[in-house]
Figure 1 (tube, rainbow, N blue to C red):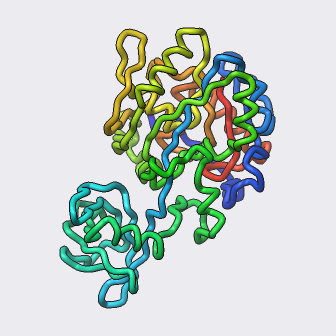
Figure 2 (figure 1 turned 180 degrees about the vertical axis):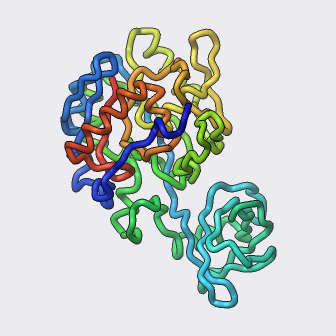
Length: 346
């Protein structure tokens, strides 16, 4: 399919630069796939669409301050954007994106004041380097003092203290730290809202997908089939698989919170109609023609044009249906992207 089929015009002022004042006060566009009918609600109204026996599947990954600002010995500023740990040995080695990447040399130290330095080990390609920190303690110290919240580039401001809390979901677990971008559909949930859902008999099932910078990678090929999704680490535990299968076998519906939960669920191995637990790298590219095996309904934000995330929601609800909904959201002045409003696709 042509990439141009997944484009739309968004007025720049609708790109949310800050989150809503209160998470569940964000707006909620409800799209009924069967009819194309649209409702305009608030996220606090979500419980009206779930019933006892249904399950929310959420991503419990935690974002860390992956954007590090250091200096070369010449004094030049260098950004090191950590992607994932490659080696957990005595000298911690990470894959990272660097900017600027020209003139950097293997073996060169990038200094972070009195907190120490990281060493450029080897250039990979297109601004990617292997970076060594000497030890886990050294890396954690540098992140603590020099790390920045990895806000996406369309948020045109420096990160602020409030972003440490707001660019994180209420599901995030400290033992699941590893994301360099947030699973933003989860931003709208609060603990009181989750308690309301629990009182209705709606289950909450957790999985993990450590979101990487590839989530923002645009599709550049004219044909979307030529795009490649970057691999990310995911886990679906035996307990979550067991509860997920129970929900499905008893007639409950699976509501995936976000495209990351959707990709993890749809990547899970199956034994007949039974979802199996797994842990490993996933690079499933969901595009029109994909047969959804696990996800019944989707809670998501509004995505960038010409992106794999927009292609995913089009695969789920139909391209014309999604683009019609996006046009109405623009007309109604919804807020878009990471800190923006939400959509429930039924």
